[in-house]
Length: 305
Image (cartoon, rainbow, N blue to C red; front, side, top):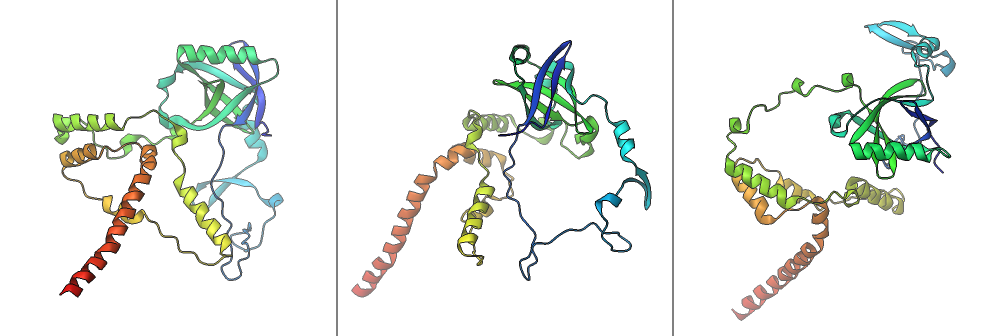
């Protein structure tokens, strides 16, 4: 059973709701170990002194800030502790804002707030009120020694605590060269806009998260399974879609033609494309049969001559 990352209270105004902070994500990445290619033994990383090359034990390691090239100031554990906030046991809601007021770039990591025993009433009261008003709570929470900015967001039966990035952690889009101004400045015609809207309308669908899977991870798992069965032998995996992807990478100049082709092909969402792969395989089988019959016909013609 999952263990809570943090236990405390969710506070807004004078109300305090006992809660546990549970992970809201699951890591599914495939992890790798580094091996020595000569004997396939694991590689160990050591902490060594940059000058002497000697290994340094953890007890002799201190943290320092490099304020100039090669110049450091040591920061003691007491310094870090004194800078840390005093309160460690509450999610303190400081304000309620419109749900759409927080930009997407601020959201970082999800957690789930689970109410403590006999704390369901206050939990449901906050959840339903946020849902009805379209608001989210902006709060601060201390986990271990660091204070985080977060948002308390209702989602179904849950109150989700979304970690937020501080403004200084975000790159201002204006630092990059982006196309500003009006669409007419880029010679986008009314017809092109109309066709683009029609295309988007034809590809619109209901958001179903389960329709989208990590295809790279699936292919990598299949390769690993083949390697295991082959007892470490080299197994060459052919990407059947590679040629198709290369062909589609074109330098588009005629937007009208491209939009028209897209509309004609009636492209859908990636999930719907996957469902249409079966007919494509049937077409491929028919093409293969035709290819086999062709040499036989040519042979009969040659014999008749």
